[in-house]
Image: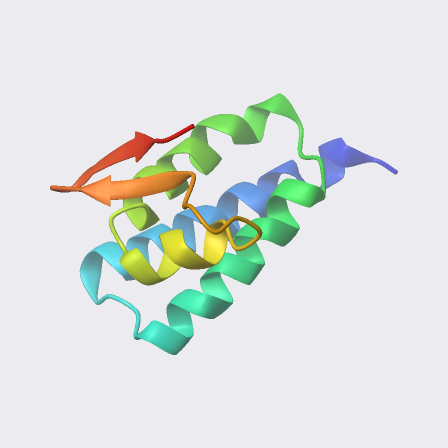
Amino acid sequence: RRSHQFTGLINAIVKLLCNVQQKVGYCDKGLEYICLIFKELVFSRPLSFCYVSLANFIMVFGKCNVFVSKLCTSSQLMTIKSWKGVLHFTP
């Protein structure tokens, strides 16, 4: 696997998704797909060059309740909660 070949593509995908969310916004079904895309991007084990754009991705989409609820589905108690527009991590 040659991770460096996909770094630019991953960054471009993340920037595109963030720009659309900031300018237009996604519907609830779209946010479900965005969550699936985000999981695939993270599980692809990107190089550290992608961490800044992925962190920005979390900041942009972390304000969406649908995205946050789909991100952590294995726990009865949510690990990440959005409270007054700020992300909070619970034990």
